[in-house]
Image (cartoon, rainbow, N blue to C red; front, side, top):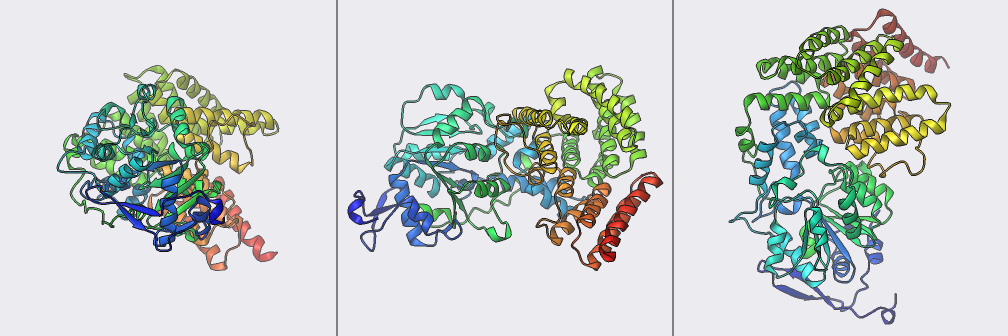
Length: 618
C-alpha cells in the first residue's frame, strides 16, 4: 500500500514504565506500513516471533488503531511484584500430592498435571475449604501490587479503549486501571451487564475474589457458555482482534466460544511452541489453530508485546497446598485422592489408596470404588463379588431410584461382558428408570455410562441413519448443556468412528477437540485409550504413539485396554516383524491378567495371530 493511500499515523510506540509513565520511541525509519495484514505477512507458518522488532512494531500499531479485546489468563500474574501462582502450578502441586507414594508415581504425576484445574477440584467434596483457600491464594492484598504486564494493559486501555476478558480471580488489573485513572464496567454477574456506563468492558468470566460466590473452580460449573455469558462474550469479541496473553486454553468453555464468536483475528502469545511436533499451549489452542485461518501465534516473551523489561516468573516453591490440606480432614483428603484416581481410570493406584485409608470410607463408597477398580483391571468375577457387597451396603438407607441406577448399570456391564445382551438390556432399563428420578449430582456421575449403553442400543438401528443422526445430535446437545463432558466426547467418539454427523442445527457448539484429546483433557485414561483404539490406527499414527498408549495402560493396570490397543494396532498393520512380536506379547499378557472365558480368549488370540499371518502369507 503506497504511503499516499494510507491514513496518517503517529510515528511513536509506547512502553509502560514502572511508574506507568508513557515513553515515546521514534521509529528508526520514520515510516513503516503497520497493519494486521503486515503482521501475518511477517509470520512463518502463522507463527510470528516477538524477537523481531518489526513484528512488535506492527503489533503495537494494531493496539493503537484497531478494535482489540484482550483475553488474559493467570500467566500474566506470575511475575513480581504480583507473584501469584497460575492454574497450571496449582494443578502440578495437587498432582504431586495425589500421586505421592503410589506405584508409577512419575507417570501418574505427569498425567494428572496435564488435566485441567477444574477436573481435579470436581472430585473434592469440601467446597468451603477450596473456596477459602482460593481466596487466600488469589486475593491481591498488599504488599503485592500489579506487575508491568497489568500496568501495560491498563496503559493500553487508557490510550485506546478496548475490552478485557479474563479467567483470573485476582484484582491486579483493576488496581492497575485505577492507578492510571481508567474507568471500566466490570462484569462478574448478570446484573453487571445492565448498568454499563463506559466504552470499556472488563469481563471476569470465572468470577472474582471480591465476590467469593462467583468463583468457578469445578468442571460441573464449566458448561459451554449460555445465556447472558454467551451474549456478553460474543459482544466483546465479534468483529474485533483478540489478543490472548498468559492463557493456556485449557478451560472448557472459552475456546469453543472463541471458535464461534466471529473474531476478526486471534493473536495468541505463547512463550515457546513447536507446531511441527504438535507442541501447542493446549489441545484447545491446537484445535482453534487448525480451524481458524486468521489465528496467529506470537512466539516469545509477553513483555515484548508492550515493550517492557522482561522478568522471570516468581519462584513459588512453598507448599501452596498446605492451608487447603490443613482445612480438610485426613479422611476427606483420602476420599479426594481415591475419587480423582478412580475417575481418571488408574485402578492400580486407586486400589492402594483404598487399602491404605480403609477407615476413611463408608462401606458403600468403598465397595463402589473397589467394584470399578476390579472391572477396569479385567477382574470381572471380583467385580461381581464387590458389586454384591455394594448392593447389600446400598440397599440400606439409599433411595430406591439411586439404587436402581447404580445396581442396574453395574448389572448391565457385567451381563454384557458375559455375552448376555438380553438381560443386559433389561438391567439398563432399570438403570434408565433410576436415572430419570435421580439428582443432578448422581446423573453427572453416571452420565458417561448411560450414554455408552444408549449408543449400543442405537447402533442396532444403523440402517435408520436419519433417526440415528437426530438422536446423536440430541445426546450431544444434552451433554453439553449439562456440562457432561465425558458423555459428550463419548458420543463424538462413536459418531466419528461410524462416520456419522448429527442433523444440521442439533449441535449447540462446535466441538472443542477430537474425542481422544477430549478424554485426555478431562483426565479419563480408559476412555482415552478406547478412543485411541477406535481411531484408524494406520492413518498417521506412529509406533511411538502406540507404545505410549499401551505403556500407559500397563502402568495403571488397565489390562483390557492393553490387549485391545495392541490388537487394534496388529489388525491395522504396517509394522515390522519385531513390532508385531511385541504387540502379540501385549495381547497375550493383557488377556492373561483378565478373567475371561476360555472360548473368548481363544477368539481374541485367533484374531491376533490371523492378523499377523495374513501379512506374511499374502
